[in-house]
Length: 401
Image (cartoon, rainbow, N blue to C red):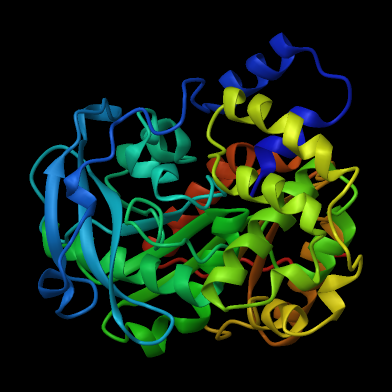
């Protein structure tokens, strides 16, 4: 989600401090979508037809990747919210050298919020590699990294923002495409931050039914979006929360035909439309959003507790992650200073998983805010992932404390 907004705007930060923090996090400081969006992302109905998870087209990306890995931009087939075939874009990072006899395992990376417009696709970002938390460690270990854009980012449709089923299908089909490109075995792990945390949890819920030929051996999430109604209610009086709410309402009004005019003051709609048209990939994006976000603090919602009204309440319930099959181990990381995803909400989700029999590794970072939860937990997450690929018994902190 918009974790970078929350961290950059919390308190009276000076510009150079925000820039320094983003540099440390490995976040690109250029303008969003520096690589021009091209005909690569446009596809005919004839090309879309086909089995989900199969390749439509590919092209090499001239990006510098760790240890000589190659980066391939992909357009692949997936499944829309009504069961219809759709195109989804993304990138596959392939370690250098021949495929070992046992094959290379796949880590599917699910990205945090970058926006809701097609030009906000991570595969269009010049510094895509730096935005994938733990990528250097994963490539060094020989893992293939599949990084979906999600539907509507890159491809010319509305992005179903914070729609778990849509995200999960795109993630699972990115693994299928990575296997098609490389001949990799079916074993994989999913790893995501914020919106991506929601995506990987839904992936864990849907993997056995949507992609039964794949072997999901672990789900790793940092500061995931779980209880959406609580998240939006808690955050509505913050700049980050207003951005999140604006993008969610804008997207869902188009995806689900939910009546946005019943919950947003008409005077605020031009501002909501403006925020929906901007990406969130750099400090410059954050600064551009400050003005319109400030206007929302004056005029925004006509129904303050919109998350309690239908159809919004039902949509939030539907897109709140549920329990995972107990045989799939889970890694959860959470920052104690997170002002966007409440630590209590993530802890409560962990308790639900534990009560259902899941084995959950819990990494709590007391002083870490939302924007750095993925970066600061990446080393522990990749080690946990390595242990899953090695077949070690998964650890559990369910009975700790």
